[in-house]
Amino acid sequence: MLDHRPKPQVSAAKHLDHCPARPRISIVVSDLSSRGAGRWGGAVRPFLLAQALQTMGYPVEIAGFCPGSDGSSVIPPGPRADIPLHSIALPTTSLGPGAVGYLFRHLSGDIIYAYKLKPSSFGLALVHRLRHHRPVMLDIDDWELSWHGGDRYRYRPSPQQLGRDVLKPSGALRNPDHPLYLQWMERWVGKADLVTTHNGFLQQRFGGTIIPNGKDTELFNPDRYDPAASRAAYGLSNYRVLMFPGAPRPYKGVEDLLTAMDILDEPDLKLVIVGGSPYDDYDRTLLDRWPQRIVHLGKQPSDAMPRVIAAAHVVVVPQRQTPAAQAQFPLKLTDGMAMAKPILATRVGDIPAILNGCGYLAEADAPADLAEQITAIFADYDYALELGRRGRDRTLTHYSIAAMGAGLHQAIQENVLAKVHWRSHGLGPPNPP
Image 1 (cartoon, rainbow, N blue to C red):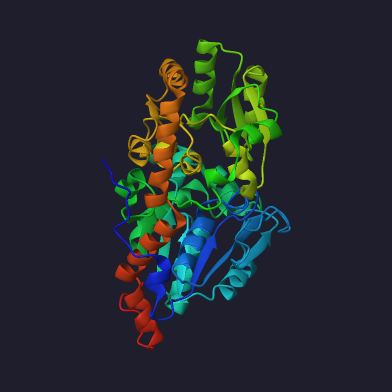
Image 2 (cartoon, rainbow, N blue to C red):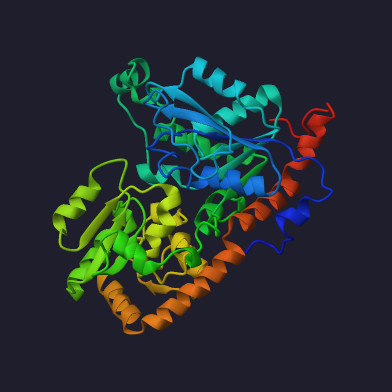
């Protein structure tokens, strides 16, 4: 079983004593809009990477695109507004030379860190390296091609369709992140000076170093919140609350959980969905089918999430057994663990290794098993709370922002800093692209 634990480390503050200045890192993000990395107010992977690097003394900036808007829909990084953020508005998904040039002018880092295996981030980072000879790191937090059929995907247009896709202003191949290009990009992973990812599925597929998602364990500190008061504030005092703090999607198994609740048919048991899908009306589909089971709180500010999660009796992560789910590290999992909540999840991907006995596991795609686990949790809720406290301890040790920063620093030292040293002495890169 995969072990996510970073190697033993000293504290960030102690490690920075008497150390040379850290190289500046520019994180390139393909989509900073409210449909992309901006959707949770800075609580998603690129901002977590930035915060983690900051704990180790690295100056960090984030630069990227905001497709389909004037840039106003970019959400700043919540409680960490000290991260410089350069957003480039794009009226469409197409990338012109002007937008690319503007991005390059804002990449002041000694190291370029591309977020996601996409042409609009990693591809541009490699192009930038051709001229500026700066090391390129790549973070892979999803299998992008899994949304398009994975290894079964094929682009086989007719000659007429190919012409339309290439020549029309709205042609599919004008989108730099068309699945054909995503497929091509997978062949270029080895060009990165360092690859990071957050789970075993992606590491097995692409290689690299596992850097689990970190949590701000001071913000997500259960001692700061009163569960009863939180339930009262959100109108949940009369319910046993199963909380899903995220955007429902079919592969996330919410329908399986609701079917389990139908099996139990206990009126005081409610599924509280926090947030919603920025992509479609799937939330409405769930509400229409299960109006008696769901309380929908809607989107909440990222810094309000600990107070919301405090209202939960159980945090649920009922992922289905799909490639998209296997390739993810569910942030809601460590949200609940950090808040010492009992966790009910499914045996998908690295979830069992992350919990490591600190929660309840059901088989994927098995509503009856979920129902049994819900019954077990409330049959001995004191024990469930004890498992939640163990989950909090595990988060402090292995899944904090500080642990994330220590893992990143070690990986950068071992793979990248020598190339920064060559560049700083005017010697050129030791391994040119």
